[in-house]
Image (tube, rainbow, N blue to C red; front, side):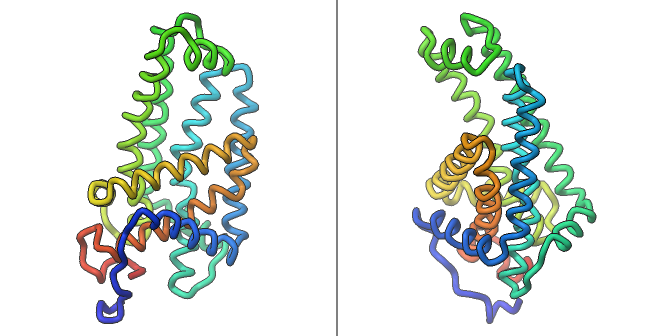
Length: 262
């Protein structure tokens, strides 16, 4: 797109995440089939993992972690749907499947790395609780009684801090990387660097965005996965609009002519 015809820059404020969610909801309502199929697949996959892991606390923890961390990979197809809608084209699952059949090595590699991070979190978490918890943690009830409500006040705080230490860099690395990889030919390390740049430039706004994502995903998980059918695609579409508006705000520090949508 010619820079002379590019949309004017936008301001990024604390209300921007709500704007992204509103635009994402519009995309989901306008073209619901791809999103709902993604959400249904995620809900069925998550429910299957929980059923297979019943009676095994750490397997369930791993299933939850894997589902949350790999969700951005799965939702890349919805970024494509929103991108094409912004370009005036309505696409369906055939376009999404074509994207996945292309097996973009950057997306595949990033997905593998996120899976490894999820595995590391479960192992570190299990190690911490096995060493410090007063009783073995084998169920959610054990976790609630001995960790959350246990006699050691710092154990649950330490567990949360460990999770935050892992979650923060994962969010910073991925929040803008997936739409950037879809929209441009940037290498994976460059996309990750630009994602960190955006988070560093708008730390409060991006922290609010991370909190909203966490709350929405939590609602989906706590509704026995049923909420994910709608909530995950909503976030997928909204993530595209977050990328576009941050791009128009100059957050990436790249020329206005790069990428497919200006």
